[in-house]
Amino acid sequence: MNRFIDFMEKHFIPVASKIGAQRHLVAIRDSFMVTMPLMILGALAVMINNLPIPGFQSFMNGIFGGKAWQGFGGSVWNGTFGVLSVFIAFLVAYNLAHTYGKDPIATGVVSVASFFTLGAAVSGMNSTGLFVALIVGILTAEIFTRLVGNPKLVVKMPDGVPPAVAKAFASLFPAMITISIFGLVAAIIAAFGVKDMFESFYKLVQEPFMGLANSYGSALLIAFITPFLWFFGLHGANMIDPFMQTINAPAIEANVRAIEAGHAAPYIVNKPFIDSFVNMGGTGVTLGLIIAIYLVGRKNKPFMVVNNLAAAPGIFNINEPLMFGLPLVLNPIMFIPFILTPMVCVSTAYFATKFGLVPPATVMPPWVTPPIIGGILATKSLAGGVLAAINLVIAVLMYIPFIIMSNIQEQKKGQEI
Image (cartoon, rainbow, N blue to C red):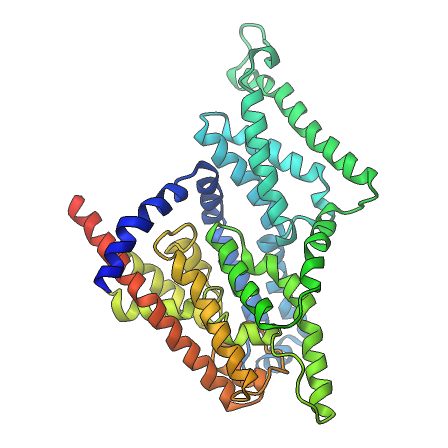
């Protein structure tokens, strides 16, 4: 293990650190860190609405005389995840402009205006428009910051005009040009008959996924893509879930019909399969990471502070505190286990189901169902819980070497100080 750690410190970490310091990636990472409290609050609100405790829903309905109490969670979601893309469009442009030494607030405002120019008000304000928001934020910053430095585009104000007013007019033409560019893009897209570019984007990307069979290959692909997007600050779970629903939801119905007819279930891979055996604790099997930190990371104070906060949400598959607090986003040391652990777990679960050791998943528990319990419910079998427990142990073992590596890095920082 020491040789492995030395090799990673010598060859992998320096390269990953350079990538992690890249201007645009840092802007994205910092933007998501700002929105972390909102995402945690939104996730907790959804968890309360869907708390998987027997009788909880009936108890709450009895107290409030119906489901009106769920309006709290829905309202909080509307103010957090429901407008997440708008925040990201502003923050990415803001942070990127700051690195260029330009006016960050003006750049962020222009970015939001450009985002809505593309039609975000129709369907793009929530996580559906997240990827487009990132692109708009980056492009706006690159365009606006270059134009705002052009003396030919500056509106000269007479002496005596307040500095704030002069500054605003200095950005007038750059803002008009930048927003007009996105308006032109929207017009071109509309000219091709696209009524909603955000919805069309998902359909365009979704089509290849719809052609994927519910196979080991598709399971590996899903297990890889979600943490890979998360590593670069993209909310992988929110972006991939619509695709997973399209691929996997029909498989559940087909499995149920086949079993009722006395046949073998035709599909191993479906959404409850991924939720129950792979996304334990959230993307990256991060409940395994939480346990591993408690086992070997107690001397790492920053890790323990975040881990104590992340433990309770992690039981209900909410891992935003780890994503942005540890962080896992753009963390070069954690890249390998964060990507590989879900792929190993999906392999274990796939072949255990294929060889008949575990029944196929035919029930879709709420996504906040704690691990192991979710495996039992999804397969209607104790064997499902055993498989989930085995995968959790695998995750812990895979994360341990990299936590040790992080401990060494933290000790070196302490010595340098």
